[in-house]
Image (tube, rainbow, N blue to C red):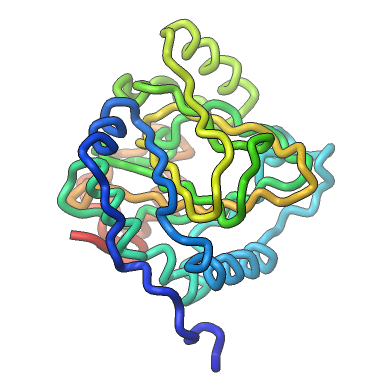
Length: 274
């Protein structure tokens, strides 16, 4: 059987959210959902994602020769374009429904997916806001961050600055040493609570708003930290005029053919829950 057409676990069944989880997410800007997928469900998807990361990775520099961003992770985006198995994962109705319900919107579209593999000895991920890269006119953007393997406490999940999503566009700083220092000081100065969910099982997931300030620790272990992320945007969101080069690049790559004022609905932004 062609590996792209093998029977895959069904990811359409619902994960029941309660009102406290939704309220907490909207108030704090982040939420963990234990068991969003079972480890058994993840096995074929993990293998497909892992294979594509190996195939598409172009990072060859030794760790000591990379900048801070390069040390943070191997980053491979929109893997779903290259593999039917990964497309099934990225387009999973279960995950999209969770994204919509947490934000309180009727439907969501894909912005893009990305595998974030933090290598053994990999560096920390500096404080940043995802949405500084996204030229869209809505605050209803969200990322699902799901480990494909168990993550022990000494690697840990991301750290989130609770309530920071309510502050909007804090800084145009891209992920860097400068963003870590400047935004770290900002978090401290505002007295924002920093939350880290610690160890996570394969299939657990955190969700956070696009404006939520977050960072991640380095990887002191001898094992790869394998994570898959999916970014969603509320159905009906529109493109805004990019105000930075980073946003210009995102518009070209993730919303091809669109311009300011257009609905985010290119061929790369399918609506997957409504």
